[in-house]
Length: 495
Image 1 (cartoon, helix red, strand yellow):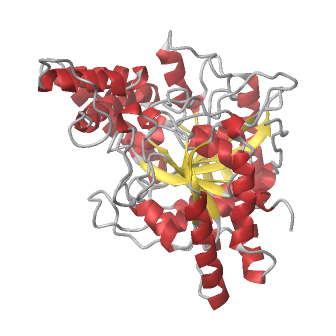
Image 2 (cartoon, rainbow, N blue to C red):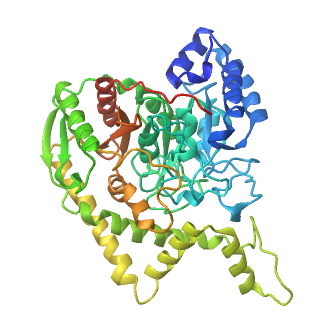
Image 3 (cartoon, rainbow, N blue to C red):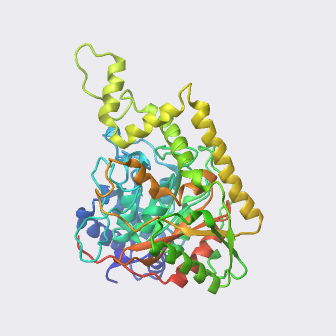
């Protein structure tokens, strides 16, 4: 078989079981593709020795005939996941040289299932960003280009390296994390599938924390079936994470029937934003028609507190970030600034954090510290938490009225060029999360499915939001949408 790195998880799994290829061959094809794709800056710590060792072990396991679905499949791991003995920097200078002595629960579950780790993937520093431009490793670059334009495009963020690597066939799939849209937005920008499961479905243990009440890991894959396969391996109760749900994990792949007859799909009127590009509006309307043709009932719904979601998110997330990032002080691990004669512990903290954190992280830590300070705690933080409760109730009311899933655009535009949204106005960048943050605030599952191309030939995605803990049902609706949309476009190779 040629072009093995272009296979999806399901195709590769079936080829391995039939003896048409081996995990060593699959892994070798991916490692070759990675070495030829440095222009994308997707993989930032390559681990070919670990990959080959795991591939050989997987081949032996497949021969014995008891291998789980992910066994022998080469994947990339976002740099936010701690991986034993491998640099895990969260794309930050302050964690320079940090090699954990432990493995995150999610990456351990994947390893236990026989998945092959090819290396660590680029991301925004501490997962704070929507364009992968805040990374200490430099920008991740999208494999897509606008028409005949050579401008480098963002693969989205914060899971930009994961998105770029999957879209460019450097790996069969990758892990991502989603705090306000960091799986779904990059997936939409590069034409792949990305699912954020219900909060508590995947363990957060060993994932570097950004905002603990919002962060959730999930898979980024080439299609919906692959997302179902990988998500099942990543889920499960973890006693080391107090927010992890003690619920059985269903066989998500078995639930992909494509039959959505009688399902009720809600279209929220509040998501019709002023100035929404006509292409996004048309894609959304086409998506609703596709689901209707597949047998679903389309209903208009209202989520009245949507307009407060972004402001509430950008109070709660920085508040939790300032608390979580207080531990990076140059004392126990990571980078410590060079101190001058007579400098004390205060100067060490100040210099280390000033050197170690990038501008976006500094900005969010300062906002977070401000909203948690004595005079402003009630005015900002507590008010944002109350708004969050109202947003969650909006969704509960809609689901209680019989709606099975909600269809929205995934992003307000196609991918933009690197450097086009400069630091001058960070709020412009924050607006990228306008369709995705409500899902994190409410703790719901959401999936982005590629559904079309814009007039410049760039991918556009649609988002489906599901009921809590019903990822299987959500994946099945996404499968029906994917089948109807028939998206098969791939970026032309230039790297």
